[in-house]
Image (tube, rainbow, N blue to C red; front, top):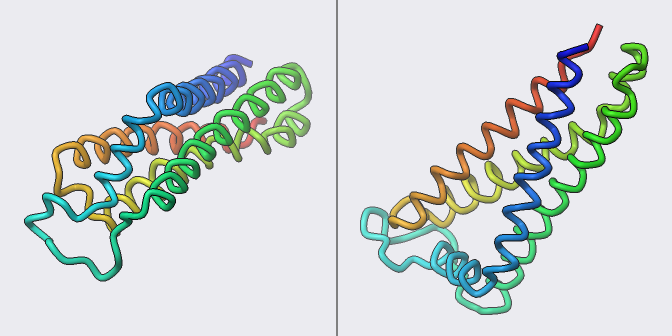
Length: 162
């Protein structure tokens, strides 16, 4: 039973983390736009100044990218919140039922991995080479932490309860 409570709490914390980061981006929308614009630009790229693909410079594409980031952060948070609630409701149920209601918890924590590994590390880090700038490097470091936290919770929650 204590393991179930840990799973519920950790999924709840993933939800809070995702929702807080999304909301911080909304509250600081101009700064978030500036970060995405800087991260998708080749400015200050000295180590690898060329890329195999185009940078983003059109404001509509930058705003669109920011909307996708914020939207997926909110989606991850809401899915994880639903998952934590479903787990809470099934906390005293038989193992088969508890295992069956993990869907939203897995989706929410998995979406967190998609946001911070997929969007930040793969697209931001590998495609846009944001590791070359001080701000981008710091963001990649944070994204790694967030992706790993979500991933570890995803693995823990996915473990079959007996």
